[in-house]
Length: 478
Image (cartoon, rainbow, N blue to C red; front, side):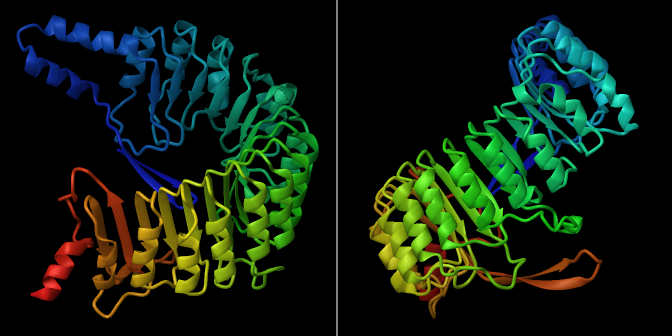
């Protein structure tokens, strides 16, 4: 199975497959004469399982026997997570049995399962601290009978709407983490719920929270440490005109939530002043990620050179920094500021920043701790990229999407060649795809560069679209 995780530019793939029948078959291959012993080993494995994590995985499901085996054989499970998967053959009786048998079960995140079917499970899970998943398919008044465990403090109810939201109110003041990414709430609903959560430390939601929701958050949740605001799906239409985040919400957030350590946000509008506020008030910020959406034709205040400088100078604990703008969002001067004022940043994602090679070269004279750099929408030449890599002395990984190739593509990248530094190219290409209305369209894929350190040498499993730099250069020489 494969899990895809979108995280502000980071794409990770996890390959995990748990097949109990295959496991037994392999054990039999080693000990074919003693099936009892094989079964004993298998049961011992199940009995010792403390954490099962399958979140956001694509799984070929045979039946629900895997969960039943855990239910009848395990008493030490602490974390059970198959959140945001398509596992549908899940027995709520097995979940209840797991809750009764596993007295240290503190975290359960499941797929779509009617909340009313989980009443017994929620009653049995006496020490449960985290629950995510479920679904609401019945009339709202039926959910008044649902009660949650007394120690529950981290919650994410999938597809919870305005009418179901009141089931959270009785214990909202106990919540430390709230996941609303898949809730069906508008701006007003966010305001009503958030103001009842004074102890909230982690909030994950979509930009439908709006500036007004962020203002309520700033007034009500003084202990907030982590805030993640994802982009709402375009097909939802964003009917709520308040459902956008701009400099207004960011300024309120910075002033009200002084303990903030992590901020990842999609904004529709931005200003230098809002970034200056973050630099002034968010002194504990270690991870900052901002994406400027293209919904608005004009932005209040561009370029953001001075705001970025103020943020980086004020937030001196930053270790991770992402800034994805639009053309004109940051000049060469601003890109130089990023290099100058990011002494501790180890990971960086930059999109549509700078104007010329001079900005990139100024940037690369700083960032002494930078190990991983990702760039999109680049206007930089191969030569400037190569020189910059040589100046970023701590760099271990580089990924570039879109750049100005030399007359002989890849030739100028040889300037950054060195032992154990592997360079791969994906040439620009046209790909035929089918759009949402079923029509065939041609999509332009820009060229990519991937470079990384590896003591094991270059990989040998290149797909057809990837060309190692040494092979490309050798082909040109021939």
